[in-house]
Image (cartoon, rainbow over all chains, first blue to last red; front, side, top):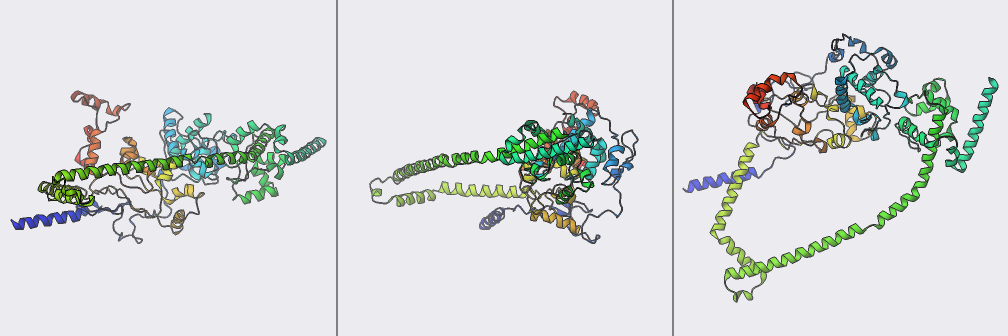
Length: 196
Length: 409
């Protein structure tokens, strides 16, 4: 009987001691079976141990020099059959882009709705909901134009496409975030904003 | 032709002279006859404001205060119509300007003529004279604010009143305790000699010696410890509340909250694939290539780019490898908002794991969430079949949201 009492007392002392410690905000805490929690294969976004194969110890590898990003070179868009290889223009080729590039996406309600969603994601915080450059970031960033300004009224879809891809003035290139297809949809929506 | 040009030149010079003279005497009167400030304001706000201030501060391009003293009208018009042309022609002032402002070229406004430029100039003059008048008003309001120290006085009064009330309550409570302790000891006469503190201590000793009170306390303690132990056991493997320090003190509160940058802008993969993706340094540079470059936190990005080493962000949401999760399926197809799982990210200075990410948590949502079947022919037959056996709307659980192999394989 006395032994049981001692045992119970010990258990409770241990329980009190263990539960009185709290996990800090910097700790992930305990896991039941770490070998099932941590991936055996190399995951790009989780790295538990140093990678033994790659020299720098990272799981991620840089693409081989000269690699061409395929998604920017999708050779066909919808059924129009437009070859997107011609979009491989340099940063200074704005004048060529303006005249040569034609928007392969039909301008309809669907593409405008998609363009609006994309504009909200990638452009709105600077260029503003109405395109007047009234976004929350623009106050801090400065130099965000009004799409309705006279200098921009006649800009072509190709101009918009090129500026999204390579940037212009204070705007930096957004080609890594926005796919060509999405850029064309945004171009449609910007023209809609210009009309007000 | 030549005389005409000469005449124009003369007119311009004389006008400039008059303008400069009048500007010295009275800024507002000088332009009132020449340009329409109201239409100038509209023109300025629509076309110039993004890069120029009507005052003397530099925004992107130079501040335009006193532009008419610096340049003549003909030059301004020529410049506004075609800045590149003026630079190419080798105009000394234009080239100096171009070099001073980091070779950032001003947008051309070929549609602008003398009238538009004059209107804008009139607005600039007006804006600057308005500034001169403003300080007087500003001091008045400042005085009004400093005089109005009433609220703080009121606050002190309320605090004092509250303190008095609390002291009163404390006195009443002490009186009650003394009366009660007298009643418990049953001896009214003997306690009269002892002090208030002794009476209180005697009462407490008697209370603690009560066996019912003792066992109740012990049981309460045992139950609390048991509950804490069970909770702790359930908490193993759950990283809710995990908020590690990141290599760069990036604030979601500032970027997503105050500046309203869309989550997708940086986490570009969220609509396209399994991972929402952590932005690479080039996305940071989209803004920080221009602003806040001198901040030590942002300098860390520059160092990472120079050394060509990615920033090692600490992963917060560690879903165990035994469960598969895809962002695109939930965000793009399911239309789930980021905040539903990640909490109010736009208010977090340091990001914290808000959801438990346990299987129960996943299943719970799959049971509760309706599938958006409207306008999607894919679901027509499914909804018809579902309507036959259930009156409830089609849930995620009904289309395989509880299948083991959907997430575990």
